[in-house]
Length: 383
Image (tube, rainbow, N blue to C red; front, side, top):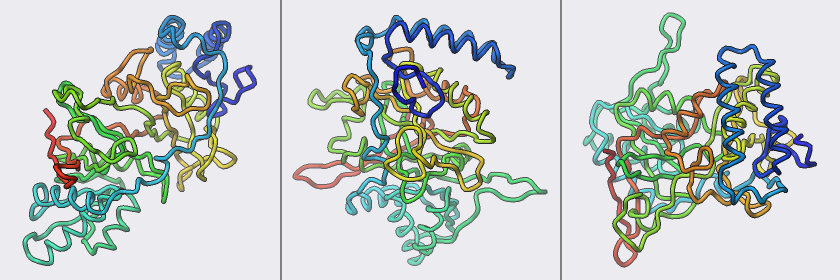
């Protein structure tokens, strides 16, 4: 624990933000002692980085310095389960995507999500009608494979055995159902996927591999931050519409981490917590919903026993027990940070296998309400 009588979110002795200055000094000493004892490759470099972060943490955002008590809320949030998407909105987005992006002789990568079912149904109907030929679906996870079977679309494996090694194959387009999406000032699309924990935990590794092998990555969304998208302009950081308020990407970022043994996992998770000290909290997912931030009595472990999933939660604890996001969205060292920078920091941490932060999407199809409440789908192209 932290010595304050409050539980650490993952039970690793990591430091929760908003502790008093005296506790921060103790934290700095703990980090130094831990890293001096570490013999892992690159530990000396990481030690210097952590010490700089702790020193900076003492100075940044004076609004945080008045907090001396940390209350750990329950990990459950609205987006822990799949968002209840309007069938009309899902069908509209699926139609726009399939009509424009799916051509004959394509391998179409699909993830799980409420929009993927309609996508596959449309592909099946077009194949049956003869307007498409030789199109196969490449599912990124077991749930997506089930959707393919229900829709009656032929499936092709993503990874193939070549001389005893699994080799990822290329896909022409990846349909990625996302939880949250924004368009930055630079015109790049950034999104988060994998927040839903039911009906099954997401396969972050497979989706990340497929995104890397896809010629085009297309984000599909009817909701953002668990709310229906009313105006697409609100997703643009440089929106010229003064009546819309842009909300930066933030909240939970799912991260898949290796779990080869408990001691190694403890060290890797503690390192992740140290890197985002004062900016985000690390919550481990439980095998059941309503688990506390340490994963409850039965923390989630993959069927293979080789990895677990944590959420990097960019929450502002100014109200005890709240799940309120930082106004700046994603932050580093107390300042607003781009999704690309946060992605780089996450990927620099030992034990991280994959994450749900998307910064390489080429396109997005997003539903919004048009005139007189009609549904409109907008195509967004990344610059």
